[in-house]
Amino acid sequence: MSDLGQRPYRAGFACFVGRPNAGKSTLTNAIVGQKIAITSNKPQTTRHIIRAVLHRPDSQLVLVDTPGLHRPRTLLGERLNDLVRQTWSEVDVIGLCIPADEPIGRGDRFITGELAELKATVLAVVTKTDLVDRKRLAEQLLAVSELGEFAEVVPVSAVSGHQVDTLVEVMTGYLPESPQLYPDDMLTDDPEQVLVAELIREAALEGVRDELPHSIAVVVEEMIPEGQLTKIYADVYVERPSQKAIVIGHRGSRLKAVGTTARRQIEELLGTRIYLDLHVRVAKDWQRDPKQLRKLGF
Ligand SMILES: Nc1nc2c(ncn2[C@@H]2O[C@H](COP(=O)(O)OP(=O)(O)OP(=O)(O)O)[C@@H](O)[C@H]2O)c(=O)[nH]1
Ligand SMILES: [Mg+2]
Image (cartoon, rainbow, N blue to C red; front, side, top):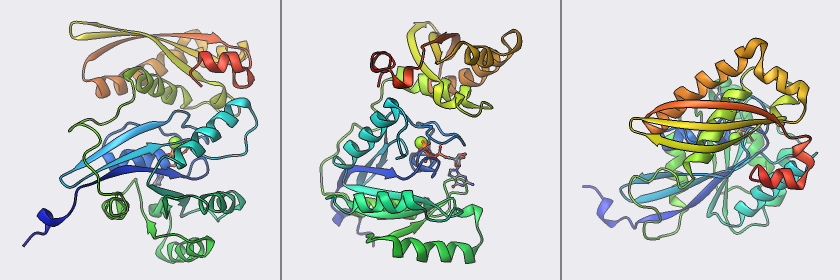
């Protein structure tokens, strides 16, 4: 006999926190089963708060993907950290993500300390379990449980899918009883322009290194539906002319590749054919300039 009928409907907000690159956005996508948040192997990929909704018969779990918490070196960094802390006060459940394959560091201790002050239920999530053997995983689980007071410690792999369902069960269990928060089938409430800009940025991050990933920002200026086709005009911002040359590449080859990759992703997201027009512009030192930051949406 199923007890589905007796289970109260639960709905609420949860977020993953942790240092950059811990696997927060990848896990968010794995849970909702669709790519909403962009990911990369560069630290500090996430810059915008993205909400992704998992609908189930007896619950609605709204995942708020946030940037990695880090020691800020620019005004942008400070703004991003503020966004993270603001989110903490608005969610019911927080999953502190710690990669299975990396030692626990000062950053993790610092974040754990801050989380202890909050009202939300705090879980520890040991991510990327596919990268370690059982022995290493057991050691990490023990180390994490000694790091602080967590309601639960859950190992998970967003790549293999191992334990993703379990994590959802655990998180949902800590949500309050509540009516549905979002309409059926609504996957995110973020504007399409933001999601599209993020997909372009993800493509632009591929293969660039050093400071350049941090210097790239993308703004979608226009999206014009024309029958089966949507025309998208977007600006890719960098901080210096030398970076502009790198992003464009020899005779525009790099920018073309970025456009192709981004276009495929956007077509998948929007389900229409896309014409994508990318323009690279220099916004000098925008990461440190309040005016430019505002223009770029921060
Ligand atoms: N093997 C493996 N790699 C993973 C897993 N989850 C994430 N990754 C990789 O880890 C890197 C960082 O993933 P993200 O999801 O972008 O990390 P994040 O915590 O959102 O990073 P920021 O947005 O920069 O704070 C990417 O290269 C992912 O492919 C996992 O379960 N297994
Ligand atoms: Mg991220």
